Length: 575
Image (tube, rainbow, N blue to C red; front, side):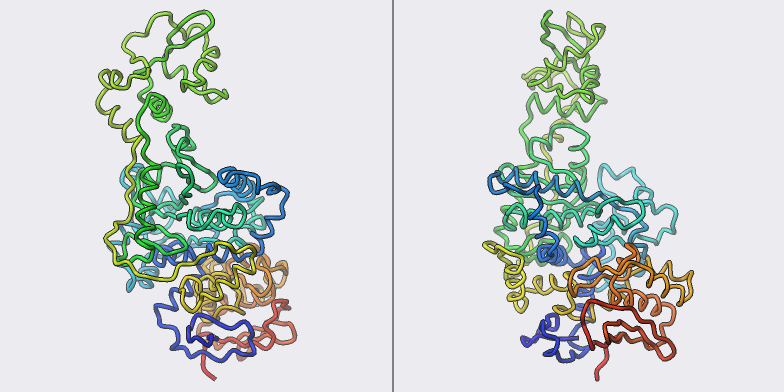
């Protein structure tokens, strides 16, 4: 355990020879929860501690992996592209390498009681149930009739069981190809959100000041403040024009902002959280965001948008008809017949390409006279409104103009140093800058905890997370003897998914079946700690071996991570 000379218990010097023991009292219980959560990064922890979102984004920005992508031929000539084209290039690179993953097996399960006990001093249970999907939230429209537990695959478990979903680091996302059933990287929505935030900064040069990470109870996405706005949404990129195009893709992208409260808005300068009276994002920047996202979600109704609306509302199509201009003359066709042609064509029913789509209609679908009891789609919306049900008009206007439910601006606006990464041209410059800010910026300090380099971060939070929050390896370990577990870990591949002295957590080792010897020893420690909680275990690095020992047993693994001469016990003790 270590401390820097500025007295911050959560910073450490890089030269271990200068490190002095840090008393256990240096971490308050609240700080220990927060800093250990920067390692385990469950969705629940990220919700409780929104600083962790930007901390992980900064850890990804410090990752050598993301900087190595700049050398990929895919990014040649990036400097010649417009900002939006750069964003498109990054998006395609990401979706080619990462799949969306939200299964229950990857990071295991926990219980509501356990998580509520952890966080009862941070958030009220009733407020939590109204804003977090794992604790009873069901949304207001789309999710109202959906059994949330069935939606997440939890219906086969007792009602108190909830998934221990984790927001993966870039390295953990990239390592998914090692897991059965995966052929490339993968991650869940918060992981994608954080990855886009880091990748667009490093690869596309988008300033952090122009990006906002947003979380709702069931989803996370980013808003990029360029032109009319751009949303990054898992494996999708959505512009304002795409937002109202009525396709299945845009319908999925709209779902969260149409139906849910935005619980967190987070940037490099701070956050606003719907549950907390305090906010650290500068109020002028939050006001700017609110204006920009509101404008993005508001499109003046017109005839083309009505055509888009009907595309995603097929129940109304039977009330409309199109007028088509063919070489043989003018004809009319039922709206549903025209829309049915779109999936197999490069054209749409919108005015710009309607007459290119029309020749695909069979002759029996064409009428020389207007169809009875159907409204003609035309430019005069007011005339259309007079002929359609009021409910249709209301739904159409709601399609065009979404009012986002954002955290209120009646906050106690706290002042904290923002993190300005502009004009930093290399990974090392970023690391040096963030190091210089650790004494004044809690988020910068948390970033090094999420970065997992124990030359640069304290051991106690890392060990707390490792020994208490890795349910996957523990579940597998209950069916095996200590020696069998030792042999399994020995036979895993020997490469760490993290570079240098950075370290994986036990479930990352177990899921991806690889790890340096030090990581394997910590994984075995977690397994033994659960099985034999009264035993005094210690871990020592000597002669390039990581040895986990108690009074009667010792298990050693070769390690290349360094840390020679290090001895760890948990809880950390003096002397």
